[in-house]
Length: 119
Picture 1 (tube, rainbow, N blue to C red):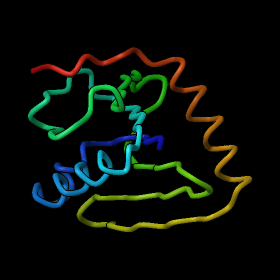
Picture 2 (tube, helix red, strand yellow; picture 1 turned 180 degrees about the vertical axis):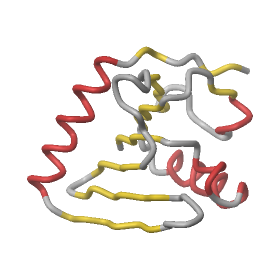
Picture 3 (cartoon, rainbow, N blue to C red; picture 1 turned 135 degrees about the vertical axis):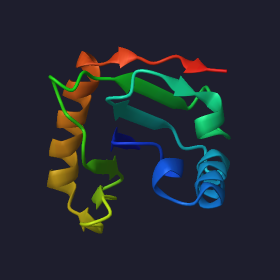
């Protein structure tokens, strides 16, 4: 799955839930591609994770300011706003929209720089 990431899931939701979510992703063998404005990532902030299936790239805010989260997977685009005053989530199942958003993500991914996960 591809994520325009405003912050790690553990910053938005309960840390125990975030841990269970990451474990489930590992059990399913999912690969995540996270595009973020954050230039450093600590392993302790995203544990557990599979280094062979977790890829993170930094993109400068001047290119794309990621203040709203978007997940792209299967034929689904999920939009999430975690801000306290406007929390919302929308899941749209639409193959053409997913294809277009995947192209947009992949273009932005190419502009990003790999982020090394710090121990």
